[in-house]
Image (spheres, rainbow, N blue to C red):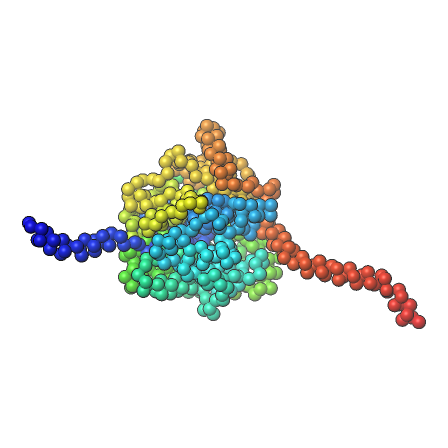
Length: 589
């Protein structure tokens, strides 16, 4: 072949070579779906009786994780999710609203993302992605801390631990209002607001508005489902009428058996115990059973409603030809919520004062206030022990599903993974670089080899991963877990478990394997020192601290007015003593 003919051939093939290279460089869209307080066995794919067909479909075509862990508290989890860095190094070592007063302002307890961490959104933005967020942020309230300053092009977010799902209304008396922001500016809510629907509506609007620029997108949807107050449309609630009439013990057992059948836990595993001191189902009156069952029905309905609206997003992406090039990450921030706010003195009066109802007929609908309590939370965490706020598997082990583009491994993996791993995984899928320079380096590990079927694990048997929040702490090493749960439900003692055989944490091995126990204790202490863990004070109680902090903040905020009032009253009293007798004599004369 002469040179002329070679040149002609090259000219003919060049467009195809360019197209092939471009095809290889196509970067995926990434949808990160974060559910709030969803337990390990809450999705249908994990053995639940709750209908989550859209999430289940993603699980069926992707990788389902049975050994994924988060922090037991929402804000620390979200900090790690966004940065790939330990929550203390990211500035949020505890829930800001309940951190001990003496911890506030310390490096690991800023209550906002630290200045030296970079979010995955910022890195994707720098790499040419359009970045969107809707839902609960809870990583900082000022203009430098909101998503608009942390890498998101468009955002509509709540910066609080939670809020009403039907209207702009706070859910706890520790807040004066529910603070919503769009693109960093305070905003209101539409009259037809329902959180799960609205978040998906906004997400679709953002994606649609950015289509013209041709960039891939990263969309983070942080649902309020199923955080307190548990609320859902009536048509979803009615589907679960009578489903929970047998109570939490039957539900825990059913979920436990389903997890075994799906291969999520060992066939000979034991069901984790419920914490001591909880209510017995059979000790309730029939009226109480009906109310508790209805509350759990609302919880199930809220989760199904979330799944329904996720289905709307999937349908939109399919209709617009974007689905095939989209990665879906579906997960929860921590285990199920055990709180019973009505147990706090004065809370029922506050509910009445702000217009909330606890009427069983309308429970879950607009104006109502529902929650499932620690007993049904224990069932949602099955087969694990404990629940949200605690370091037992019920508080840390949560669902994770990766599906879509880049995910070629179908089925379940029991490989250990941690919430810090999500950010580096996303960057790997996007072909984006991690932050350099003085930024805190990501300590999470990319799960890409795992979901591509190139590796069976990303952590070696001797690798250790620590976690601490509000005194509750754990360290994972291979199949083993060192754990401490604080009072009132825990005893502040350290235990050692083999999670591969005992995910319910029923058989303490600390005495049987003292060398391993000592090694892991030393590794935990090194971890705590490295990230700046501060031990909680004696008698610390997370829920009680909420009230203490609120009173402290109110006094600090309003002390000038209180001082002025005291001075005025003092002046009046002094004047009364000084001029009162003289005035009285004049009046008598």
